[in-house]
Image (cartoon, rainbow, N blue to C red; front, side, top):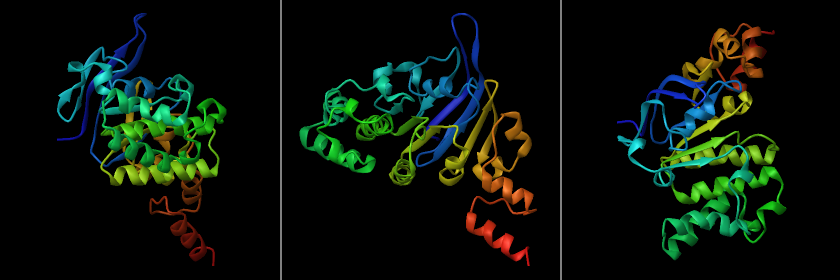
Length: 269
């Protein structure tokens, strides 16, 4: 049984506008997935239905075989953590420490375990030296890591990150890459919404492409990114490495820059 089962999800706003149209997919424990597509494709509405922030108009979401319809949003937050695109929508405590601690206190985690989780989450996100800092004294890119640390500390089975790479420098991108690796090794399912195709190519084994409220592709990242017609339909730009490989006539689908460089060297003699 998959950790997450999304079954024929659709969502209509009260005004009748359809934001998601019959979307289905599964997610296994320890899997890292990117969901990509243009604004309005239905990405955020879809993932908000994974933890009950938005209720499906039809269809169902099962977490470990149990429907999210049977739980409140607060109950689901303990199983599916969500990091909003804008961290200012989530932060409301006076220090980074208190922000990470807040959810743990709500869950009544004992003090020793609480301290351990805060320390771990702060180390993973680079927040250790900022624990006594007011989050709003940090730049936006670092405030994102405050909210990510809060979700990590909650120890959810599923963690959703909405546009985590936006505004990040190379150091921030490296932290995000390391987070993906560590959390999936711990058996967490990571779902990331992003417009950064280069980051997806470097860090995700699987990609789901959404277009016009539907899933139009779901598979291994390298297989999907080499499907030019899919990327064009979704109005997404293929990663530079893919475009170079195709232009060079390379038949093997690869996102490995060393393989591409070797192919170019061998075929340019």
